[in-house]
Length: 65
Image (tube, rainbow, N blue to C red; front, side, top):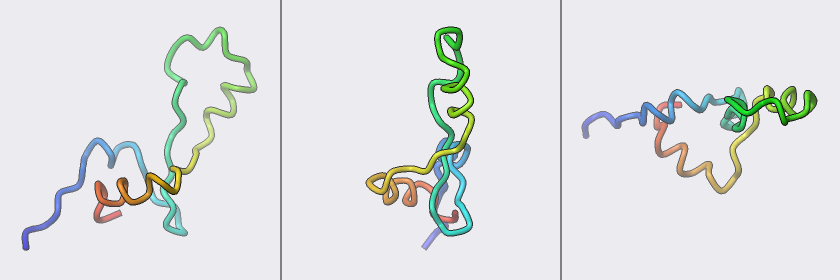
């Protein structure tokens, strides 16, 4: 079998945690920030985890993570 290819777009967006869960960055942080509260913007800086329902699809895109 040839080596599996990693989806490069997904590789730039997701990282694995030590326990094997997949971290992601939060959306809505790039523009139109004036109407968002400071608290909301601060919380958007924290990394989130992907939903359980998306785990299988992301792991298929990232076979070596």
